[in-house]
Length: 221
Image 1 (cartoon, rainbow, N blue to C red):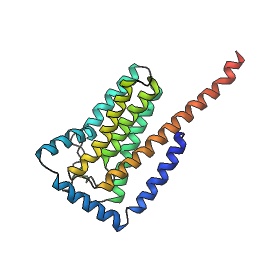
Image 2: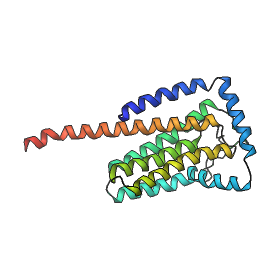
Image 3: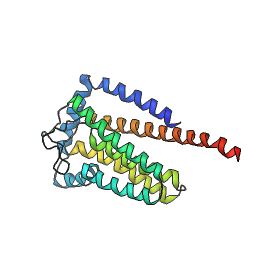
């Protein structure tokens, strides 16, 4: 399946999911899962989930993004560097806009956006889960890089599985830490996949256009 088809499928799924969220069934399921998560909550499990959700924090994402950009720049992978910047930037902006528009309350206390002292008075609403979106975009990009640039072997397969576990646990951790509802995390994953597939679709479309534009010049030589 091409990235264009993946994008179209998940765009439809995301839009349909947005409509389903208005149903009482989804709201009741959110409350049920949230209540159940308290029965499994203790000091040990909170530390465990906090370690994973730390990967989705804005400060961590910013640091890892700087390292990723430096790495791609030094490797002279400028196109991939631009792709990564566009993926992360669009993910953060879309997540913020959806939070402001939908304004769904969190299951726990009200939280505020606080990035290095900025946004302290801006409420960070519940939908979608920013951790789910950001972890999927960051680790999803790494998985794509591995599959694109390295041969499939036991090491790349193991690393891919670890990154997938990181994506899943980063989202689930938000439920067990009572910072998001189940529907917020699922919505975050759907939005993240939609953004990721759309970005890769444009990336390969642009590369194909570049190849076609150079063909007449090569033939002339």
